[in-house]
Image (cartoon, rainbow, N blue to C red; front, side, top):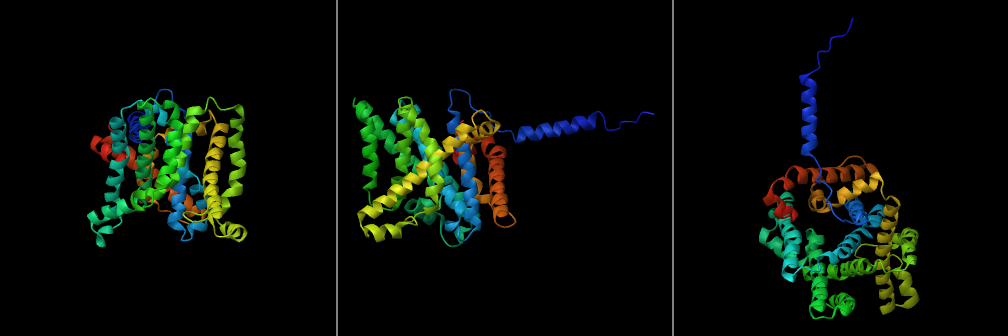
Length: 360
């Protein structure tokens, strides 16, 4: 005798409708059409995953500065984002200065200030400081907020104005010299206000991204081997890196060279070299994964880096110890920040404008 199927018809259709509704609700924005550089998007996607993981380590390890995972992530990830931003700068150089700077203001500075108020409320800072006072402190030390947005705004504005100024004056052939001069001129500024030290450090990566992008087709084939060399050098150099401090080998330099200029210069060059090697390593790995499902997923994620960056720190809670704690905490930060964006921030235009810097 045939069994009676009492679950056919409406219930199955209802389940499919619920599933379809949930998929629609959590649907990622479609990957933008056009002539996009998929390697750049994939590197951004990989970079934001590493940033979330690195912040999970920072949140749960009191000695995070000595944690090899933290060292691996932050020795190159933020320079990576500046390098990639400089890489795409040529696409914007035909815009009027006012239009470009206005767009950067909306995309970066408005979310920078808006999210500060959110973190101020969530972290209970009002118990010890007024909101106005916290904004004054933010300008003095933007690192207390989403410093990347502020520093990227300044870095992009400096180089855009330097290049546009040369082109407007008819001196386009000297624009590379203007870029290099701008990098060194900013390093002469002596103040801690407005995150100037962070601009000084990261502007070199923004400028390098612009110059490599501009000349990538003219570079000799031997340049294609540089990512391989970088991938080899990075794990050898990175263990000596320290955030906001001199490298671990600095005392040896002082013993050999004395506490003088050469020791400091070598330490500064080392820190930049580590970051460039990390960037090259990321390019090498993701080039090897070209046209794979992993790269496709990272490309999609690379279009949502700002969504994840601005709010993931609100959700870094996990369980377990060591790797388990870091992974569960990073997973929560990643999933919840993405859910917040897809379910709320991207669905309402005022929220898109204020918190994500989107104007459509």
